[in-house]
Length: 449
Image (cartoon, rainbow, N blue to C red; front, side):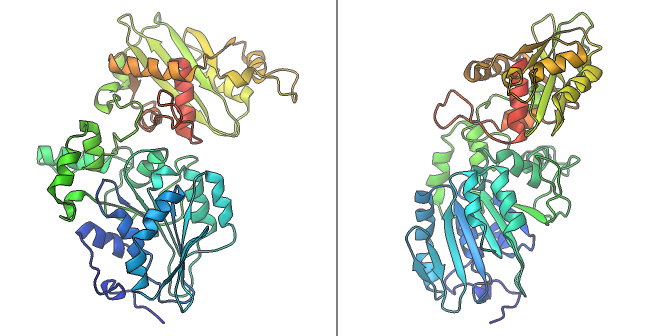
């Protein structure tokens, strides 16, 4: 049975109607990759459940919806029981729950607790893939499914949907892909306060607009699919009542902005919740460092992951400045050392702090990476102090006491790294270890601090 692409509402159960303009726009959005929500109570879960039915009358249609854990998945499935059964579906439960329709269409539900779980999906191909609370996932599983498990079929386009609030380990790449360097809420809020049109910065993504040039933040490779961000808020509808909003207003201000307004500059679980882009970022020219100030460098070397290095200095008043940033992928340790010597060697650098594993002898070389780097440059590298918790607390303290400042123009990656660090699940005093570039940036920065 062929379904016309024009009127979405005719394809949905007669008793269901969109409950907000944002939800209606999301359901009709033609972008191949869509991020919807960005605030609590925005109906994002319901939206992807309904959106999954758009082509369910076609026998060859195959869709899959993910949550991080199985209990979360069960909660999501419970919300489909009336909707999908009224459309002719039958729920098959067990280890691999899915809704099957008599003509052959299938909507699967799966949990993805670890990134490697994505390899369990190597066989099937889908026209619709959605993640509920997608920032709970790192970039890799999202990227893998989009590039390898999506397939259009005649009359059915591929659609990839990410429904989420700010926060967690995927916050950084969600923000970069769909909003750019500054969050949509902050730009619109500033425009409202001044009565001026929104000032979209270079690289910014306007909401509701479809883009063709998005890239993966980890390596800059083109996503090769159209992207769009549709923000949603609890104030878009009146389903939850004033009591819900009143309770949310009792949260700390930063969480209010994240969960009620969809602000992606602060969020629940954020470690450095005292980092303020309006205060801790400064213009490079305003630092005016002197040659006699102390300079030093922090380096997290990696070949399989990013190498991140930072140049620091300290003013007589005790203010610490991060002057410059070096980020590179798959470059040999010796070449990294030569790069850094060329970039920063003219400063009177007192110490070069290098990640601890660079001093290991792995058996493939007579000398460690640190020794090879020293041999090539004449620089004596010091093993960086690697107590993660004390390092994080020192950074937090310096930010809190307004003694740490970052050059906005020359350190573009570090602000996002600090904004997206979250408390570790097993130890709230530590920072969750992730596999993204922002984690490497943070480590290089931490070694310097």
